[in-house]
Image (cartoon, rainbow, N blue to C red; front, side, top):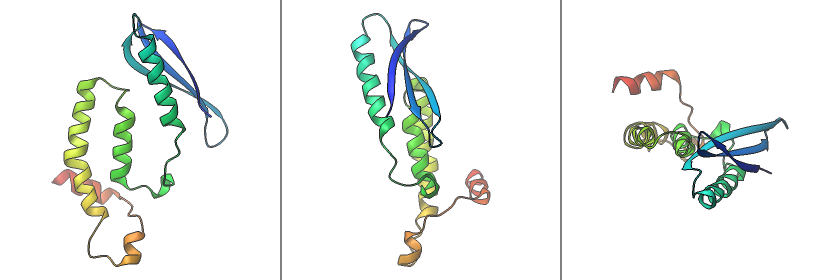
Length: 134
């Protein structure tokens, strides 16, 4: 279960989430809403509820089995409310238009047989170096 509350920091609402990690230890995560305090309490509370719901959802795959491109898309979604909009725009452009298409092609080779197609592909340093040479 994830609990949360709003706090004011430098005139901006922040969402504070409290949860137990996989080892059973309590953790706190703070996320800026980007909303000024004046006149935005209801919107900030709505954002907090949405973030709590999103945070409680368990990933479909075990983190060891997630594809690199899927991980990047998940990371991109997590960054949405954590960075400035211009920074997010840059991340979005690079991840969606360059990195994900490159690694999707490597992860889903059409020549594999059915058994190999079910197996998750691991990204190793050689593949990342090859991407940087493109």
